[in-house]
Each structure stands twice: as C-alpha cells, then as structure tokens.
Image (cartoon, rainbow, N blue to C red; front, side, top):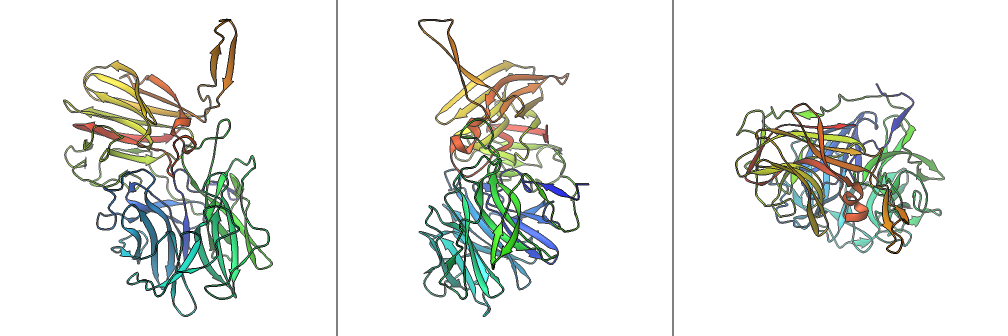
Length: 514
C-alpha cells in the first residue's frame, strides 16, 4: 500500500503529455496525447487522483483514426480535451496531418467510443465547455486563443470564431481550457512554448466571449529559469475533487545530466494542488514528492511486467506505429507468440513494423525472446523517432547493435551466435551514465590530456543473454541522443519489438524497472 501522507510525481510517468481531466462522481479520468502511435488518446482512470490505470483508448479502430499517410514523427494526435457532460463523456482532439479536429463520445470511458464527428475549426488544442444556456463552446489555438459555439452533434460552427484571450504576450499561447466557477468564466492557457519556458496563465470574464481580464501576477505557474527537478511545466487542466478540494494535472519533464539537461521519457503527467485567492485559481507547487489529496487511497493492481502473448489481442499498454495491421502484427500464427511481418526495410522507413511500450522508469530493463525465420531480421529497439533509435537485432547467425542518430546509422558491434531462439536485452541505467568525459590529446605533447565533461543523462546497454543467463553487452550508448533536447519533437521513448525483413516471432517480452 502507498503512503497515506504523500504521493510520487509524475502520477502518470513516461510519455504522457497534454493531460486533460474530468470527474464523474467519485471517478476521475485523464486523456493524453499520442501523436504517431495507435491506438490514439490513452485514457486513464483513478479514484484518488494519484493512482492511475490505463483503461483503453478513445481512438482505437481504423474507422476513428488513420495515420498511415502521416509521415513525420510528432504529428498525428495532439492535445485532447476530455469532458463529462449531460451523462456522457466527450473527447475532442486534432489529428495533425490527418483528419483535423474530431469529436467522439461514449457512455463509458473504457469504450466503445463513437465514430468521429469532424469539427470545422482552423486550429489545434481544442477545448469544450457548455454555458448556462446549454450552448457548447469550442476554444482552440490559432494565432492566439479563439472560440466559437458549435453543434456538438454535427461539429458545425454556429458563427465565426472570436478572439478570446491570448495570454501575456509570450510565444505560443495554446492548450486553452474554459471553466465556469461561481460568477466567473476562467480561461487557463499555456504560453512560452512547451520547452523550458513553458508557463501557465489565467484570465477571467463575467460573460462569454469576454472580455477577459488577466491575473495581475501571471504566469501563475512556471519553473523556467530555476534548478527545479521538474521542468517544462504547463498545459494544465483543473478539476474539483469530490471532497471539494481543487487540483491540476499538467505536463512536465525530469531532465538529467549536464546542461542543458536531457529528458528521454518525454513529457509526463504531474499533479499539483490548487488554492483560490481573491477569486483566482493558483496552482502549485509541482514536486516530485507531494502531499496526497484528502481522498481515500485507491491503488490499482500493478500491470504485469511480462507479456507471454497468450491473449488473442494486445493489451492496452502496447502501441504500434501509425496503424494496427493484424497481418503485420499477428497473434494467431504461432500460439504463445506475436509474429511480426516486415513492411519496410528499416525502422527509419514509412510502414515500419514496431510494437512497443512507453518507458515509464528512468532505470529499467527490456528483454525479449526472438526466433527469426530464414531470411528474416528483427529485434528489440528503444525508439524516439525515425531518426533517433538504438537497436539490438538478430539476423541469421548474427546479432548486432545499431545506433541511428540523425542522418548517421551505424552498426556499432556484432557477434556470431548459435542457431535458435535468442534473448535480446537492453538496460537503461542512470547510476553510471557513460561517457563521463570526452578526451583530447595535444598533438605537440601526447602526454597532455584534457577532459570535457559531457554528463550523459543515462546509458543504454545493448546485447543478448547466453543460455546460462549471462548478459553479453555489445554496446554502451549515450542516452542523450534519444532525448527531445537532441532530436526535437514532442514524444518520448518507446521500447519494443520490430521486424525489418521477413518475419520474426517473439515468445515473450518483459519491461521492468531496474
């Protein structure tokens, strides 16, 4: 049982950005962004705001989400808003590079969710709110924050978008959320960009669409220009708990290593208390260890670290790239295995077959047992995007470690192994991140050695296990190259299995904290 006096942040660790929260009775639900991964829009359930379990996805079938033509990483499903209104759950999001803004509904957040209704707005980060007359307002980000009344059944706008409030003048006002509390409408938004300058600001108005007045001390929350271990704080959403207290879910990161600091797990979901002063909501602080809400603790059974692929379908924690192709990811061809059938000759190619789970722990280990068909090639990878991933793979009697860093793809080590199934392994460690220095030798004085500390955030060790269970390490690679600070983009690491030639069968997969 967890402590009754505190909780650990982030409450949803790993790549889980742009959280949106709603409450139905004594149950709480959060939706997060999913970008190029499917199923889309993970949905989380809690009864105490600190213990969350994944219950499914709002966009979990091809009729709802088609990303096969979405080429670049970090496009796809952006910043959902989840609301409970009039006995139904509503989720609105924008599929960048795809269908645009879509709205789906459900009686049960675990599904099924309706087919999507297109919403004709020219922006991203859509929000939903209903006024006293029952009219539905949709706010969005496009050169500031705009709003328009819509018909939620058809998605049609009921008029022209109007300017609402666009923050204090920082760049990228986005992630708007609108609330009616007492006699005021409150508009919460993020600004400053989702990187280190990220901030949350709030304004209020008596009526819609305004005018809105800004809080005199905006931004009301930011960790910019501090040494706080949680950075990039923003994109928050408010909820009033059933005990009357107020809370906020928001995204943040946990950078490690030397300047500028590197985060590999992506933007994660944090929880912060909210107090009200002079009629204004003021969130914070956002701490790694914080005070537990005054709700009855409700821990869920932990998810298993190992999957033996005995079920006819993949568990919700598994995601694939851009589409769920049952012929490429086959759970029926070989009992107790998942068989991956290649669609592309490399993880950097469109159509790559990759099935993975989000890295949720800074230190962890991934293992899988692979059996490659004749002429086949497959393995285990840590993926940030097409141009940034580390792989350990089996092809014939060869096992090799591969690093893809930007335009460079290099097999850094390989070894001959006996025929038959092989256990591949990748360990992520922060305790002794390598390399600690880059060494320079003076050409005129070979004995003069200088060192430049580079402070890697973590080290990834790639290799395989012998039949005796010994870990044969092929490569130790610097984790900074699988971070947003190097690669850019909006996602985090996903660890999983792939096939890049022919077929590869996987008997089991294990991802557990170190």
